[in-house]
Image 1 (cartoon, rainbow over the protein chains, first blue to last red):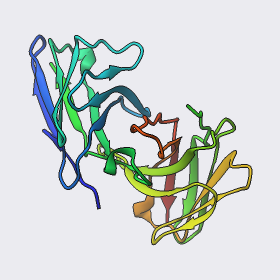
Image 2 (tube, each protein chain N blue to C red):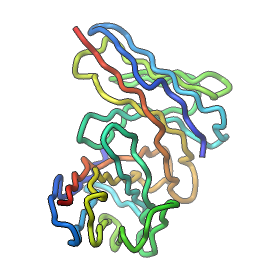
Image 3 (tube, rainbow over the protein chains, first blue to last red):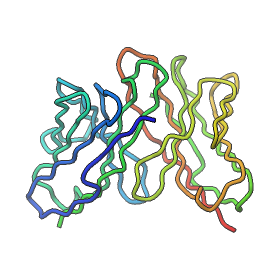
Length: 118
Length: 113
């Protein structure tokens, strides 16, 4: 089945630094990927839609200059948390739809990245 | 986007059948219903997906009534390892561009001996 790989699985960084998270579709091409954030004991919250070759679409309340998304190829999207602060500490999860929505293709999720900002 | 409503939590004993119902009163004609399972510190895992009537795979069944305003995920003979959060999502699939999916609160299933 479709596999989405996310790296790193966990990262600890100091306040003020930037962190990049990679999301790869391993066995299919994905022109669209989605980035979610999840706080402890809460549901996943959609942050943005990553579009290959064009700008990402951000959900209301998500700062596009804070969370930079780059989708340079059909198999890779990156999320960069810039000037991270402790309140950015969270579980970040990416997903992609196999076949990019053309047909009966469910979303497949990466295993998430635990970001801790100290 | 269709909003979903699920019970916050459910408890079950090992070996029992568990049915989790999700309400989605505003589901659109081209919306599909998808269920995911999530363990702590992991990404959601696809369980089953359907449009109407009944769908069955090796791990679960999905029942969807004719009006499609609700759906029920059925897990036969649960085990301790089925303890997880289960999410019901509704969204269009047969569209020209991939559609985003919004997660509801999910149902936290606790299975005990």
